[in-house]
Amino acid sequence: MLQPDIIARLAGELADADRTHAVIPRITARYPDATIDDSYAIQGIWRDKNLAAGRKLVGRKIGLTSKAMQQATGITEPDYGVMFDDTVYASGSDIPFDDFSNVRIEVELAFVLARPLEGPGCTLDDALAAIDYAVPALEVLNSHIELEGRTIVDTISDNAAYGAMVLGDVRMRPDEIDLRWVPGVLSRNGEIEETGVAQGVLGHPATGVAWLANKFHQHGARLEAGEIILAGSFTRPMWVHKGDEVRCDYREMGVIECRFV
Picture (cartoon, rainbow, N blue to C red):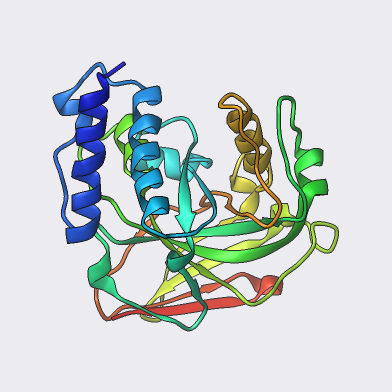
């Protein structure tokens, strides 16, 4: 593993990049032996400093759970990051484009937990039983590490490239809809750019919730009631620019719209 002073310095670099909306050189280009444990340690320092500064954690994002995203990034295993309350937008919002770097949009479902969920051995059925409701969501990606050649170590260190999420208005319990077949038709400025169905996320979008509960158990933690779990994209990321209007149609689960200003 990297030495603690290097981990702390890299966390500081990413905090500065987040504040100034800058991009830093790849961690793995500078430290080829950096491990996934190192990357979560870097993310953890950044997270704890934000919590100490008064930001409130509202949930977790899971990434790289679909073949579409794995092929788009060249990364072959899921990851996770944290989400703070000031990164949550409602459908119809104007989103400040300049607050982010390498801005892209992903189509996802989010789940709100009715009760705590923990591993080991957490299954899809366990996750579905713990979920209060599902809601459609768009994730705004925000990458502070150069994209070319990045590895999962770089992505995790950068809070799994999470920037913000836009939540829809339609909430459904898992027993009200077959979540595997929720569609997403993503448009930019009136033109369809990406389509997919939620089954593309590990066969069922809630499978990632079970995966995360088991992953947390390895660190002596659990998912708590009320947390929002952003389950991973079932389309490739779509680049956006200032002034773009974004719309995603989830059929029975409604439509999400936002604009980057």
